[in-house]
Image (cartoon, rainbow, N blue to C red):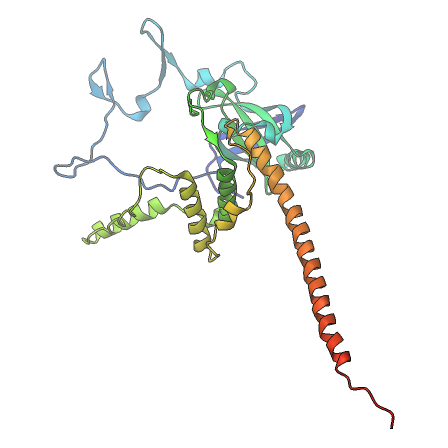
Length: 340
């Protein structure tokens, strides 16, 4: 059981089934935080909250919420006003649909939470929803209210728990207009072959093996300065950095470096010789070029196999001829017996 303070208490509405739950954060921030200081003497810089009308500093207990109208008028809004909103999602995570997980655009993914069963009565319906999600291989789309606004959510199973990902509303995700190159670019099959080889060489990675090197470096600097020592210096930049002039050379060097780092042979010449008869370069539709590469790549093993089998047959015949040639002279050299 998570011993984390809940940030929201309510229930999951699953049709006519109500599941009491507590919402707890599923992630935590490990980044190094800094304070603002006065560079002259190291004094802390603090922001104080003042009331414009009384011209005095106020405490947190005196601060509330207010909505600024178009004419500049401030309309006070209390927590009771928000708690009494006439919407079903005020204290309920309402399930509105079940969809395949691949229907969710990763761009919509926001904060992640765990849904903790709220006591013994919630155990059975909580488990029922969890197992139903598992068997259907779907995720639940929900609506809920948190921190003064209604939000979209997605429920999915993580281990033995139900997790909820906050989702952005579809109109909150910007279209990628003006992001892609606006010029015509030609991608050659050889370049795609090298890119595929680089992807294969880099392979997969266990995310558990990755760590925050920037945070570790910052912690080393802080520790050194706290001990009165000189902070570690950044390694010198490698020569040859900057603008890439030859894409093919850069890809080949990348494949070579990746293979060397894995202790493999760094030869990449065979990648260039794999396809001797190439058609003319194709435009970046990219799709035609990619499909051509796939077809030719797929057919390569067959051609290679057939050539290998032919070579084996020739070798076998050649060996047989040599063997026969050796045996024939041996018979002729045998002396014949003469009669007395």
